[in-house]
Image 1 (tube, rainbow, N blue to C red):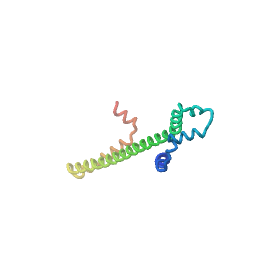
Image 2 (tube, one colour):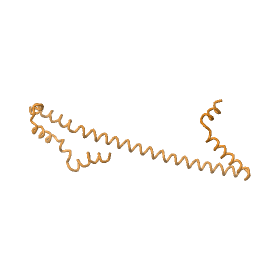
Image 3 (tube, rainbow, N blue to C red):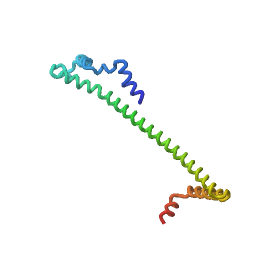
Image 4 (tube, helix red, strand yellow):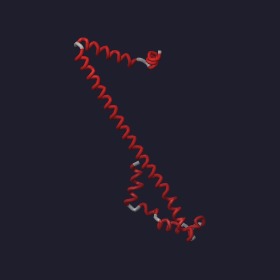
Length: 145
């Protein structure tokens, strides 16, 4: 995408590449191609219209590609910002859960005697392990029956 942007915008701007779409250049092209199907372009009444239509038909593909490249860049940037934000949020939640667990364990140790606190924490950890091994069907059956 950056390559397209460089080749279609920066290089032509630096080297006068967009001069090929100028009014004079297109008028010169039309004068070089004297064919029957562009005979209306030699009529002074229609020459301005013919030059403008030729400019449009030549520049439209390039401007469309530039527009698409800019939209891809914008989408890519917004996607990367969202991904970074999600990553940071996950890390924060993980750290907060660790802090909560530590605070909860510290509180249990302060309230109860050492042996009781140890037993409660072991029981809590084993029940969490059992909960993680249950299938969704078992959990649904317990919650809704």
